Image (tube, rainbow, N blue to C red):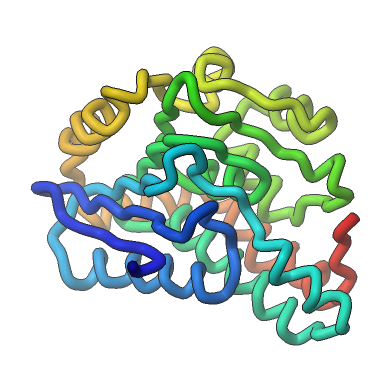
Length: 238
């Protein structure tokens, strides 16, 4: 099975993350980027939806089983390339010329929750899965670009609350605090997401320019502010 599959449902490109917990490593990020490129160049899709094939997990963030050994053996070039690649996916979604919708059908933890913030809209399944940034307990500070993504998607008070406490939110709590557009029972999540996505038939050049301007702070943070942190090679894990 491919790490990531996609198909067209009318005007909606539906991407399915198939790699178990969908943790970020070079192979997964490459497959994700390739899918986004093909949808843009080879289809006339007018919106993008991303979901997980896992029954309990949307995305659990960085593949620490892969990354930590790289840090331990001081493979700095490999680590730097990984963080630039990860930032490339975040930036790609934040500037993608289609409305991008995350169908969060399970846990979105750490980088997985940051990934969800890179989307324009978020729907989340009720009764299964939490939205959480546990980095404060893992000893992993956020890069400026990650902070900018959170601040574009969440009220500032919740960015602070979730980063400083590592608390876990349900779908209902995410909806209450305007982190997601809608909390959906599992049996209607994809129907609700697709119904919303089908109504987004905007012109790609306009969407691209709107997102470029609206997400200027994200782009600036990723392209400029993150660079010295990554180049320092001081990757804090624990």
